[in-house]
Image (cartoon, rainbow, N blue to C red; front, top):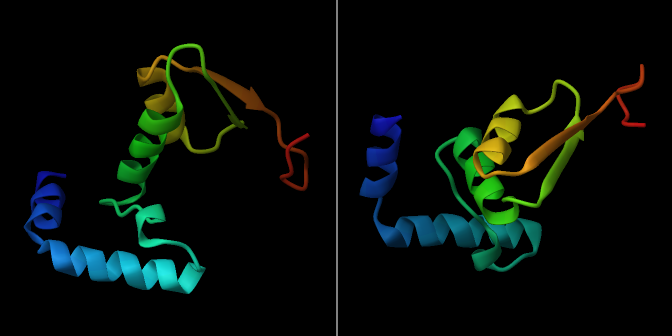
Length: 91
């Protein structure tokens, strides 16, 4: 993880800005609406830190994104799970 973090920090800002702009253009959003991270765990952590905290709840399917649930709990949020049907849709 340290290697990944260091590598991400060593990229010049303009390269990250160019990447953000290219991704934004593909999805038709503004560059400031694109977040880059060092893998999905990093992005899940940022998501939990942004949207969850004490008094908030995360509702998620059973046995899905255990990492997100751990980040939510670390932020003081309640984690609620819902079962999946045989077709994997939440009830």
